[in-house]
Image (tube, rainbow, N blue to C red; front, side, top):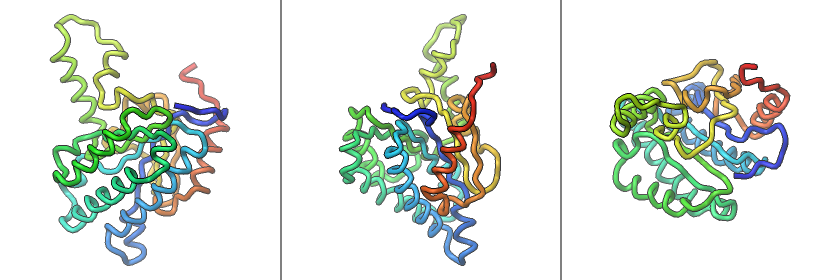
Length: 237
């Protein structure tokens, strides 16, 4: 992964909150907010890599989102995923920029076969790319990720083995990606949700935007990056 510009995060994670609130304010259906959010993400992905940031993680849905949302909204979300993963696969920038795509979470347990087929095609076509990394967290919970890692370790290692930070990281769903430097959450609510990437964000800088995600455009994103660039990271020192 490349990052030739000083004071930029190596790995940005975005929690795109308030698509539904954005739609409600405009008298639209909830999924119309998700549609606008997806359009915005397409722009922000391109902007991220154009700025020289090597790794971007996007929280697409929590583990409970597709289980608890109304059927019409669930269908619309799945259709958005289907269309945008297909576009990602066919986009020349994906291949010119050598973007490796990872999809992290319980999506294989929740998604229909037709969508899983498209996602697996994206994963397979990009698996050998290493210049940029794009991670989608789908049907994901950070709490679930930690529990899953602990269970894997119990199965793999003998009793009495000293469990190091390196061993724990190796058993996370995010084992192949670097720690997060910068977390951006939109929607005006300054908190985490479901332990989002709790291990990988342990030393991350946090940024909370009042903008609802469909309105968090490239200009607002740049403001966040400039804010990050002006901070001094002490790592507890």
